[in-house]
Image (cartoon, rainbow, N blue to C red; front, side, top):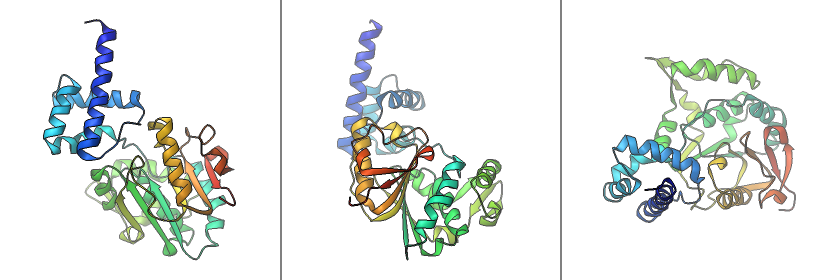
Length: 279
């Protein structure tokens, strides 16, 4: 069979698999960046011992545990604490002084993965004396990632990089003040977790669940097609309080989005935006 025909069949199989996942499990990956999904699905074929996506689709439809395992391939779980330290430094220097003016603070970390960003923000707020009046909503579509994030446990061999990022982000203490080391892993303080709520939420299908002052959704939109990016940004706009803040990843931008006119650049080099007045 010619390679072009094989490629067309593979594209059809991928669309059918994503449709099947949506109708069977109500997870919608149909507007995710297809090239990125294709690479991850090829890895999944090897893991599941399938020759084609049609074979994988059959297993996904009839064996729910297979879908649960497949989610690990369909969702991206790559992050670090205080990743892109300049972003956290900008939050500390430019956003925190405005958050101080509120009697209570609500933060939404959308696409929280294993929780690195959630704990980073909690520590930043604690260092700035704001955690006691803050609540952080951490959401993801991957239940395994949410369970991992809620535990607040990370491998010790990652901590040196976490600590270096924390210092570059303007950290006012030692990162070790916030965790306990044991058996090659670190467990973050339960006092941080008392200010976190972990919940399943899909930017593709779900609605706004709270009014928040800051949304941090970094390195998530790059995996979405344009229409889904617009939907997600619309949710963020709806969820933010008057003049609330939105933080995106270093490779993400509002510039070409339908939502661009609803936000002002705040710290553009670190992809921090502010909801326009009167919105």
